[in-house]
Length: 101
Image (cartoon, rainbow, N blue to C red; front, side, top):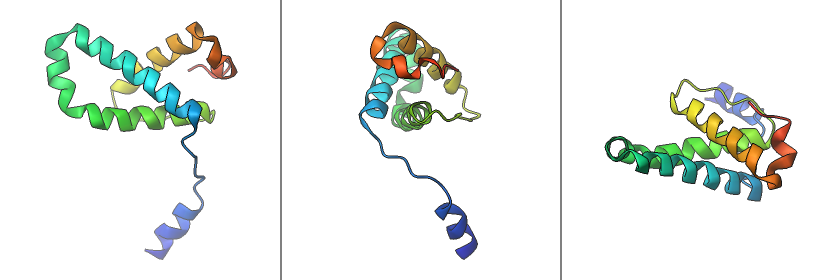
């Protein structure tokens, strides 16, 4: 237990700030809209929306803190695509554009 605790103490903590919250909301909204376009897919994935919002928040946190986000989750590629679209279309995200995935 103490070994694990000492390892965890070395991890940097990040606050969920306005940028992270807004970027998460944008990605989630775009992802949810694409699911609504295909009703059967939406029905299959509706159960996992809470998990997806958690994943999206972690993804947005990594991007806003200029970190690489690694995952085996298939949806991460969809988040990356949505993220790139958002960053390229909205000038309020100019400060993140140089860190596109």
